[in-house]
Amino acid sequence: MSDEDGSIFDLGLGRNRVLDEQPAHPGQNTFRNLPKRFYKEASAAAVDGGFAILLDGRGVKTPARSALVVPSLALAQAMADEWNAQGERIDPRSMWLTKLANTAIDRVTPRRDAVIDEIAGFAGADLICYMADHPVGLAQRQAAHWAPLIVWAEEALGASLRVTPGLVHVPQDEAALAALRRAVSAANDFQLAALHNAVTLTGSAVIGLALLHRRLTGEQAFEASHVDEAWQAYVSGEDEDEAARLAMRRAELLDTLKFLELVSDAT
Image 1: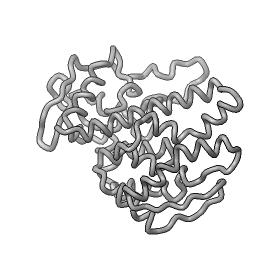
Image 2: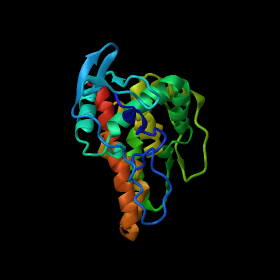
Image 3: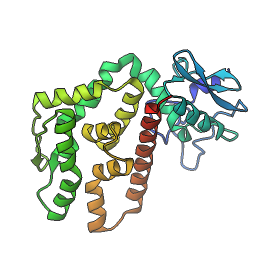
Image 4: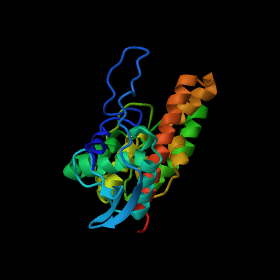
């Protein structure tokens, strides 16, 4: 297998960046270094420990040179589709499932406890615990999206969260935080990779866990985590740059949910 495949993903960057993208002057082609496609066909195959992606019959490596093996045949097939969809050059921005799988293997497995701590840490100042009391329209929208999640967190996860008006930080009960950490800890490494991304995108451990448990759809999760932005657009009109930013976040969240679903599919 060519070494090119193992160096095209930078796991620390978002989907709109690539490893060999360098700071450039205006007008310079920042994606000129995308690697050339070096294979004819990608496929999925059962191997020891799960399912691998094969390029012309040879296994793919992660950037850290581990075998790219995933727990679900459905996920492996979807990742092979990403590789098959590449043109003359390989664009990691269009390979989100592969990127998350790399993250799980290279970044989550070696530091699982730290990743759990990072995800659970969002619960200490979870977005849905800070509801506005004015204007009335915003308060009503927040309550409609967030109040059912507060109830769900208590009933399904055993986490009784404190809700406060405004933005002044209110410490959460330690028992509630421990319950949410247990819920995060129950996820496998691949689920954790997606959960970390979902929680980062939404600013809410509860929304991320609701996605993991299929309590929310991707669209519902996006709407719940962007109530304030939707209200601002309603009041002031839509800003094109902000709309484009939100569209990218929505697409990333939906693809993250797709990854979660594929990981959880029976093999």
